Length: 218
Image (cartoon, rainbow, N blue to C red; front, side):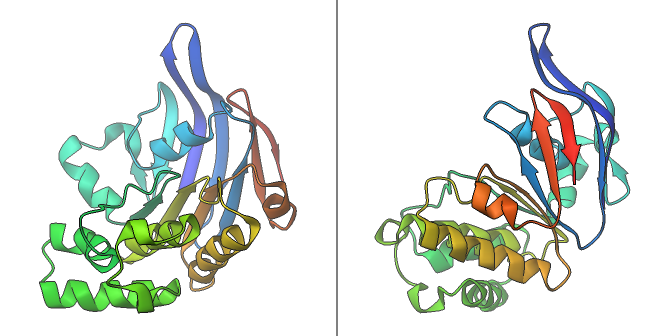
């Protein structure tokens, strides 16, 4: 599903984010990405979503070479990706249901279909009863679960989560992780960056980055 072949990313002569990174993630696999701040985790995830392009090497996502994807084709690539970031960026002028509906409306779904699927997504993360609440009325953990619902409402093949439990208490972090594991259990490929040692200790596979280089793959 995802393959990095000798990938490097250099922003300037003095700023190298990734250096000669190679690994694969199989379809349906759950993989954690570990490393200290500045290790290159966020850059790596952005490459998969074609937010960044490699300076050298190849990034292959579902058979497509990211470096060769034309700008017009990027939205179609991202429809198969669920993107979850630390900053939820929920729209505060509308309900969480409306936030989750938005990706479907943008891609041409009817309001009825968008609402039905958004409600199903909120139900999967345990927030259906809060569908008409405003984002600012929710806790940080609840807001992050809304972000997960918004990320999966398009039924993506791959979920990319960048430090999804950062700044959350343990109970909220566990709820977020449980939601992600639920999608993995039905065949969604998940790549999750984290510095949470408790989370990483329980992981079946962890890819470690240090100063932009692959340190250990377990």
